[in-house]
Image 1: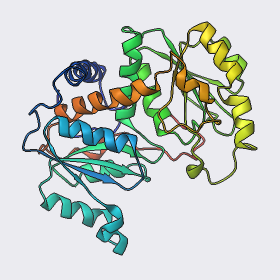
Image 2 (image 1 turned 30 degrees about the vertical axis):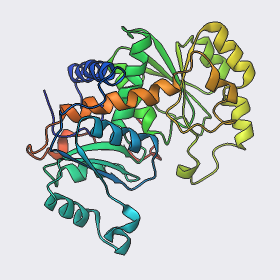
Image 3 (image 1 turned 90 degrees about the horizontal axis):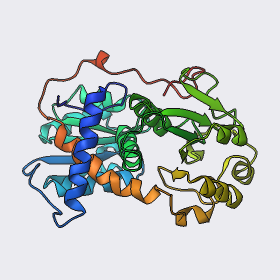
Image 4 (image 1 turned 180 degrees about the vertical axis):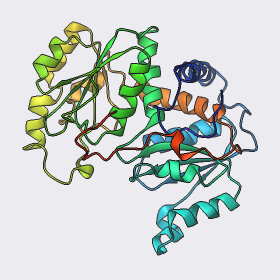
Length: 326
């Protein structure tokens, strides 16, 4: 059942997802008790290849790898030959010569982790590519939800925000649906794709979305860096119309709903400050669970296998496409 690479969620079978979530539970029990390090990947090397800035994902992978006793190397893009014009392919050829076992890659271009996977025997893990996919974020989101709802079938998750540019929305909604969770999108009409799969509800009005009676409200970060045009009047207006204000938090509390956010949080935009102290906020749970999920992924993958065929992975779609599927 093991694979060489983890590039997206769409290509995973439900059995594989369930296995990874079960393994995540086991790893979490280990490191939340007295065992902080195990020799599962002793002698193996993990290369962190991040072309985009990251704090949570990068540090989570690094901690996960070290807890499995792997050696971790951070590839510093700013001080590499990339700044001298070296192509990604040339970089991968160099890395291949180093005989690294795992490559954790984040890049602004959709599909680039898959291209790297086809050029190396190392196991490649997609840590986020453009607006396409972020599989380990989806897995940790599902793991966090399953901790509260061991059988999540029939539960409802409302994802609010910049759906159009969000790799998290695509990956997480795909995985949750594989587990039988109902998913809906809410956001400005300009940031919610006009055409979404029929199984996903589409809302542009907050009250209408809450009338759908979600169990979990999942806020997305407004990604100003990916927006080449202005999609809404102002951040203050966005918070008023789509954010969790103090009044909305009181309503959410009365209804006993859980709140999630992949981070980093734009306070006063997606969330008011009080959310961070809300007893049913799962944001810190997500951060903690990211380590155990990524330990499970690293332990599951098998480096050194055959290169995957290109058609084995779904081709990523451009965020500007009129038909955007998660």
